Image (cartoon, rainbow, N blue to C red):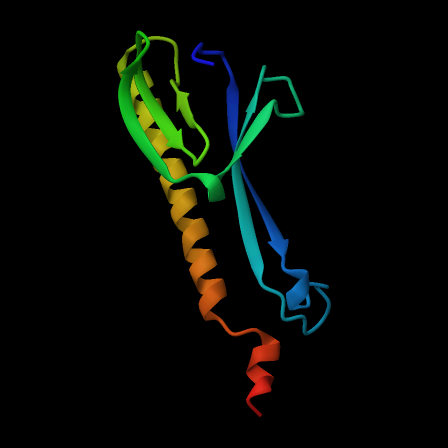
Length: 134
């Protein structure tokens, strides 16, 4: 679908505990928290249930692409299956350019945070792993 549709977006971050790591949350729990960020989009600002969601884990690249189909100041999210194009604002003024920069910066920082947490989770031994060498 190549037509633009007006959507309202929200970057959501949910923190979850890994149940395999003792994620009961009780005293002395050794769970690791991970964040699952996604960009949810809605058909109107009053909607509660998103029309769709793009998990940041599936995003390969975020880039500013400039003009797209007569709209200025756009950016794209590349996933393995699709390229999502967003154009904040309705005109091509300085406010729209700033909105695009802000969204790109926010998404890049959220993706970087997610990658760093994943790297930390891989390099931090689990409580079980700490005791296997004894």
